[in-house]
Length: 217
Ligand SMILES: N[C@@H](CCC(=O)N[C@@H](CS)C(=O)NCC(=O)O)C(=O)O
Image (cartoon, rainbow, N blue to C red; front, side, top):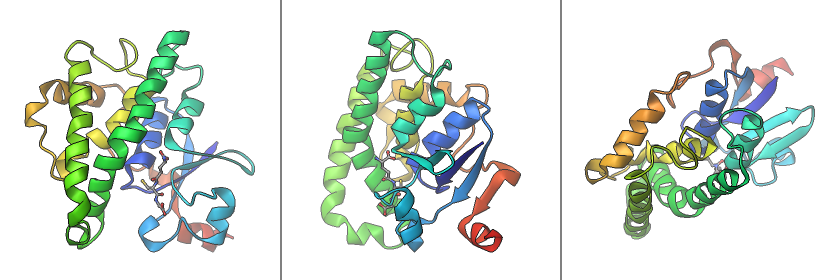
């Protein structure tokens, strides 16, 4: 069974939880609170030198970081992973786009406006750029979705999961999706997928936290 180091309110972590839920794959979740420095302890850094979640233990002592790499790993051989060479490359194209155009802007705005108390005042200089670049990324997605139901193929794949992670949080951090009807339709389609779970959903009894792990040790 996988062991997933994740933070409930992290969009990058949620992408992996969503994929595992859609695949009905059992896993053990360990909550890491990045705001309390839990991803920067010597123990965590020995597992992931980047000091970030999500992190998946795929086998005893073997760790995989980077949400989109994890998505490809868990989705391998399933309907969430496109089959043809061109579709795989198109999925990757959108997943790179997510990491350089969407996540650094909407992800940063979400972190500072939604998770950090007083974050708006601390980041006034950066917020304008995040809004402008975030809206530019949303427009690229909107243009694609005007003529496509999903991103890489005619069905939901890892590319949609990657992009859903922060797009669905946009309205929690100042972005207004009113002028993006195609994105709103796509968000609804993703949410109607059998097995879909929201970011707040927890895998029940399987969830653990760092304190629980320490108590066990
Ligand atoms: N490119 C990475 C980004 C991961 C990332 O930024 N994780 C954040 C939470 S969403 C984190 O762990 N931040 C803690 C830190 O950097 O100290 C991915 O897609 O997994």
